[in-house]
Length: 415
Image 1 (tube, rainbow, N blue to C red):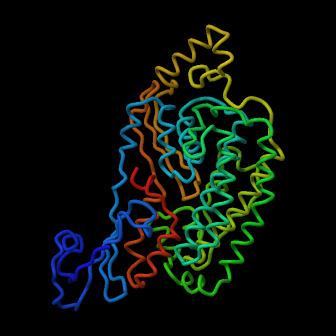
Image 2: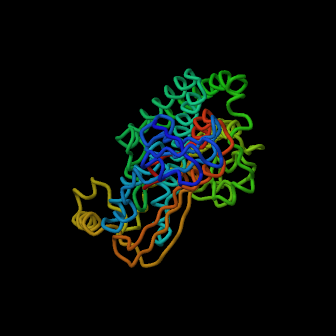
Image 3: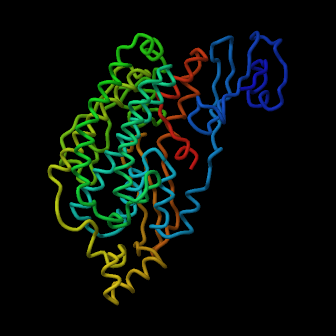
């Protein structure tokens, strides 16, 4: 961190840049404080330029763009399937959910029917990704509030999930699992039983985390009535996901605009009351329990059949055993790999309920295997936008807890 004194007569950004000393002003002494972009508080390459009045935050300006990679422009120069690995790098805590949201947007342009087994697999991996994301988010949030032990419980469970992801996709972190028209491979033998075993063990760990945090006097003092987002402000600033539901807004696309067969599953949507840091913690803890419910239902009613759209000849590459034994399938694979899935002209917008909030993709196609334009609606970007509104009036020590409760990821924020 670096600090220097400043008054409101000069913008915080200018003062932080040149280190001017302008303490004698009409509003008394103020201090400009840089937090980040390389600081554990910011959970990534986020820079906060704050103006302090003693220990009180008078102004907080989030500075973004340090992780900007031009993903949307990159998408215009590669085939639809080639962009799947780039979606891993958006919310890199839940890459499987990003993969699914992206392919669902592209498939909205195509006239193909996705088999039930494929839809069930996608729901399964999305809910496991939600559990993984919330486990890490709540463990780190506990550390932000001064509690180390909960992180050890949540990170241990998350490692078990990563082993399951590796068995399914071949990678722990950057999964690149989905394809336009299906998924890259079917679930391996015995994998579903191992997922059930994980779901049997996880509630015990969550109970331990709750014993350590939920009624912890220090944790309550650090989180209750801190970082309050009213229902009206949450809607006005475009907040989505657990942060929106913690403010009392009952909006979950899995219920309100179901996709991938979510309407078949019975689960509750946890809703907060105050919209403070404590409510955001409680909502995510309960979402983990609800995701376990969904995973159990998916596995109990797991359908048979194909795991990709067999009729989509110009969209989904055939399995390797067919490529090696049939000239027609070999040519089909060659065309899809070199030219990309053949998507008809049109434009669509699709959004999915990701762990961080609503992840949306706008796709504009002029036909062929490469999108003409692609735009990403990143939930972390919108969730962070309210920081400038909500941070003033809090103590400097509260900013750590506020950032942890918002549970953002800079990968999708900057794109």
